[in-house]
Amino acid sequence: MRLVQPIPDLVSLDLLKSVAELGSIRRAADAHHISQPAASMRLRSLERTVGLQLLDRTAGPARLTPEGMAVVEWSERVIEGMHALVSGTQAMRTKGRNQLRLCASMTVAEYLIPRWLHMFRKVQPEVRVSLQMGNSDQVIDMVTRQVVDLGFVEGRSRPMGLETRLVGTDELVVLVAKQHPWTRRRRPLSPEELSRTPLVLREIGSGTREVLEQALGELGLGVTPFVELGSTTAIKAAVASGAAPAVLSRLAVHDDLHEGRLFAIDVPGLQLERSIRAHWPRSRLLTGPAEQFLSMIGNYPAPHAGRQGNKSPGG
Image 1 (cartoon, rainbow, N blue to C red):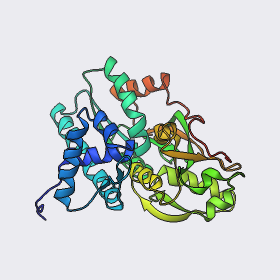
Image 2 (image 1 turned 60 degrees about the vertical axis):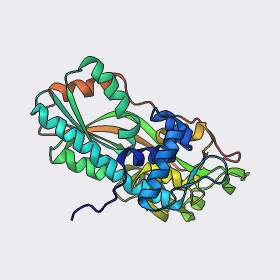
Image 3 (image 1 turned 30 degrees about the vertical axis):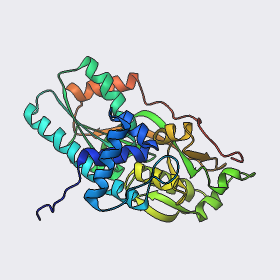
């Protein structure tokens, strides 16, 4: 089916995504190395293109409207697809020489892979790296089918038929908006209360969802979905709007907690730690760039997220 005009500008969609992640047009403009007026013009042009109000500018910093959050959610796939297109065509130009094919779950791809690649390119600048992103199930599938050299996921399970190596640890945190009643509670939140509360959740198949369900399942509890979203950015925007609490990686919300956009709520008795692991086919001996990359990050592993940032007074 042919594309229907007008088509939203990819750069503007990426800018809107940054507003959702960073909490303001000014911060998003700084991240994209443009002026705030230029960013505002781009976003207003995007709103005219799609025919929707994407940002609420009536009071204080601009916040995403429900329509804006939906557009960010849908645009994730478009932006990821463009990354895949650029990486794929770049990989074709190398014709397999000096190539490293990676895939990673969303959290690892967004918050760890860039740091690792920066270090890797200092020692192997000639290697062409391609990166694909997906949830944990999709990453394991790509590794199993050997369409990539290395895959990185968070979670507790160890897939059958794959070699694995621990490269870091992470923990999940319960998140709410600063105006949420849980930020003012005087007693800790219990796992039972969390289980009964409708949550903004990642889709089934994500490592984040798996760890939360396993942790509650060990206590004979389950999760209550409010809505399922396929990206961390969309979930953070939904939580910040006051829609519902969520559970996400502390790595993914470090800046949001530090700057007070989100608050972390302690849940004593709920174990939400998880491993970050590299996987590769058992039938394939790691050599060349893949072996070098894994050795390098073994010397500079992913940091433990730690317990930093805002917490509820009662948590």
